[in-house]
Length: 106
Image 1: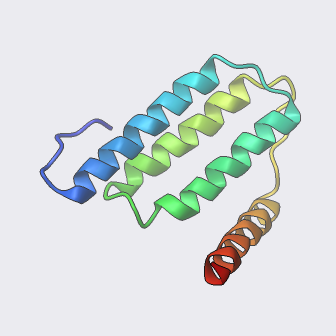
Image 2 (image 1 turned 180 degrees about the vertical axis):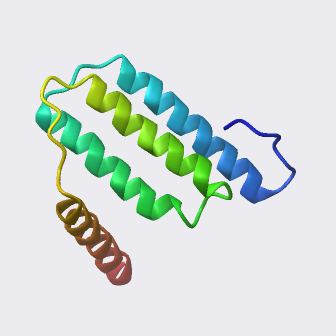
């Protein structure tokens, strides 16, 4: 996960993303979630997957860390019933569409 940082913008951004996700994973491990809290984490991570895939150089490591956040949330959840993938996709697409509408009107 933690590799040598090259002197490029992409490498620095990827390292910052990895550190953020590892910190988020550790933060989640210290919490207790109910079902809706777990599902919110699941949705947030799904949204981050769609937005970070074009930003980070090391896509496999970023995907791994994102998945680890969901695993940590599920382990710390009292009733971990995940959202269906189709629902996650629909909610993420709706948010992306809303963001794109807002940026085009600005």
